[in-house]
Length: 361
Image (cartoon, rainbow, N blue to C red; front, side, top):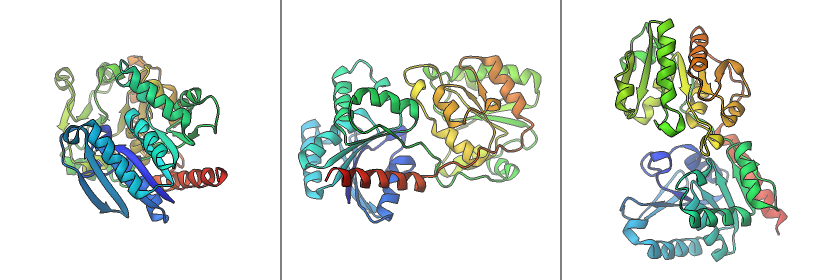
């Protein structure tokens, strides 16, 4: 089959041309390795020049809204799709990519698939026309996949009829594997004898990140050598908290090292329109490394952890989160059982696309 993925170029703030990762890279890559002809059409809004590259058996094509303007970009995308003649157009990564995928599928008479890893309607909630176009794409799609059952039920409510929404979970990239903790600390110049908790996700107050500092403060009052490792750009009040180690932004290839250096990885989500459908990639990565996780128990996180109570604290409860951290300190590693990798998930997507294609002939 010829499969055209439509994706924004910078999902989760990473450039898929310069720093390919996650479901946006590995699902197309495995499908191409399985013999399909795969093309990825990327859309950006950073005034970047158009480009075309071929790597990992895939044609990657990038165009920019601000460089071309909306009308020229749409016409260019139509030309790319008509030239490629896809059997499937897959909307990846955002509301407007879902709408654009639907438009290109209709234009080329291809089947339409929509894949969602977040509740995209939680972004720009004021933009009702865009959300209406997203729902229209979900409703008309021949196949819809979601990162977990909570999001699948939400998307199913937009479909009314048609094939049930399929679950296609998040996964860790292949480089996230267990590594020696002391060697990882040495590589990052982290204290070898301290107890290290860490938070690696994006810092956002409306996602509950502020709860972490309060929980850490309470846990540290009991465990005096506990320190909190933060990467990225947390707010000033977090950096000033006693016991915090700030690493700033670290290279992608150092992220598995950082996670493996920790005694505990903290995953913080909130009971919001975003958090109720959020399946954190950092949780997948910590689980793949076998690092104990202390997490707030939104329904998606509880599902990802298979309800393991020793890892879960009620949302918004700093005392309970602190206690989870303290309880997990004595755990050298955590066993989360078998989790599916991108190859297995891409094989599942291949089956869904092939089966749907045959059933619609």
